[in-house]
Length: 130
Image 1 (cartoon, rainbow, N blue to C red):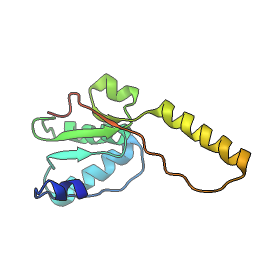
Image 2 (tube, one colour):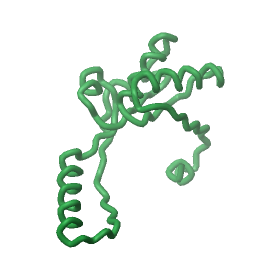
Image 3 (cartoon, rainbow, N blue to C red):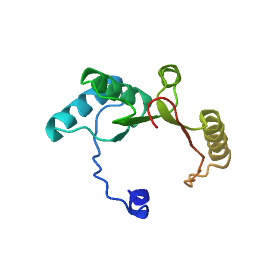
Image 4 (cartoon, rainbow, N blue to C red):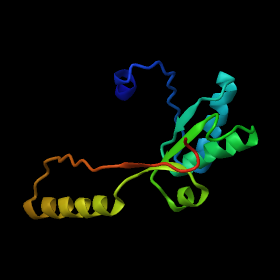
């Protein structure tokens, strides 16, 4: 939301909640468009599985992706690569290595101090965005 405020543009943001699976993405998005009686111009899903559920609903309507509505997932799984879903990728191996290093350090020093680690992400634009 801060990025939208910084961009000085008016945007109607809806945050939908559901489980983290394909069916959850389908269900909450279908309910949302029924209640709003409109299709958003862009959807950012919690993960690629939920984005796939959104795409299924859009396919059933049918709506044009990406001309009318753009869809982005998060985690860059194999299905996203196969179907051309735009997504946000993140360094899974680096996350695992860092988690292991931090766990070993905590065990060795018996130090329970919380640590914040920041890692980069990247937008991987494919067929579901312009």
